[in-house]
Length: 513
Ligand SMILES: Cc1ncc(COP(=O)(O)OP(=O)(O)O)c(N)n1
Ligand SMILES: Cc1ncsc1CCOP(=O)(O)O
Ligand SMILES: [Mg+2]
Image (cartoon, rainbow, N blue to C red):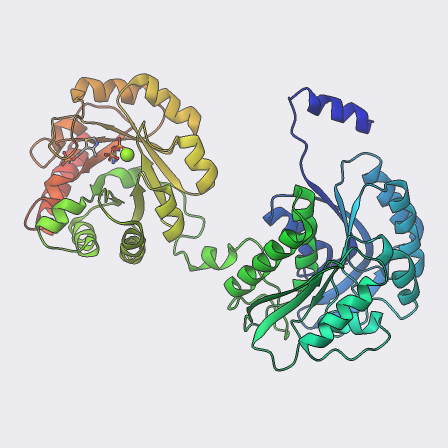
């Protein structure tokens, strides 16, 4: 088994990166919304590793808790030993601790690792109102666990229970509760006011022993709040594990939870009154996109329409109208190449074009601007050799998006494959006025690029109905189509020009097959 020292030595040699690590000691939620499952998602979303010690299995769903099966103290101890004897934990976060014995086992481990920070979410009653830890736990919480905690994060009900039934009905009461809880020994207290009656804001009170901070935010109106407490505490733990000061960790965690709640307002997971939310802000987007599990199909490069903001302005038409017309005429893929557009305008225009493209099953890519592609959830980007490198774009966009890269040489074409591009844009094949100072590579240059790569290739530069046939006739099986700017968008009738081009390409295809 690798010792802590051994692993640290390897890291010190510079070949490894030691990652921030939270250990959650909590109960499992079969519904996946709270407990261990929420902790794993929260840490994952915040970019922190999370190991787990499970204290209880709960059978629960969006209606409530149907059953609890406690893990034995011995087995909780065994899990703690497995993790702590091997892994580099920075912060321990606790959730459901269902028995005094389990709290004692945890305290014993914490004594052995005094450097570990501790975030205590004093889970006693679930959001559905089910009791997860009985009153017998209070004494050990007050006298042993809280004094060891760096921060404790009770909601109003938990704060009241820990304080022997104190009424907490106003922000002033929350201040007082935070002070009284702080007197029990934790370094910081966050009293969460999500349930505060008659409040328009979500107000939490943070107290570090010296100063009170009221952290306010607009209340998110949603039933999907199951797991908010676990998530908030895990996010705080994750930020502490990264090295943040406690107040900053709390602020980031609160913002994270609000964003996730707001994003998840409409999602439906179960039929009960309290649903979970989406930590990764992905579920809704997946369902809204018309292309579920869409795979890049190279034949889509057949007639590739690339817009130009100057041309659209000259012909007095909006980007959306230009895109609509190109699709009507037979374009199979669209790229927004809006070099002059301001970012805010570009994003809105791209969203509007996406609607058009999605309704016709046509992919929409963004030229150069990975940020715009992300902001409007476009299908991908096209980048040049001096734009954002393909590997970086891939890391930002993830595995599902389409990435095209411009290549003029076999070397660039080879690299495009190893870097993870989906297709190559090759040109300028013929001279063009659309792109200044662009070297023309001719049909021989195009052939050489096609031969050098396994990737599908689309030819670009000076291509129109008169020469598109000749381009496609070079006979490279991976040459899948032509990309055009002026032959479509610098013409009076885009639909007509697109149809002409489509006819030429279709003719070439039939005569070759
Ligand atoms: C399909 C396609 N191929 C090549 C290009 C050119 O991209 P790039 O080299 O980044 O030049 P700009 O278009 O950004 O001027 C393209 N846009 N599309
Ligand atoms: C963007 C680009 N990349 C290489 S050539 C070119 C311009 C193509 O425009 P056109 O189709 O009007 O020649
Ligand atoms: Mg570019």
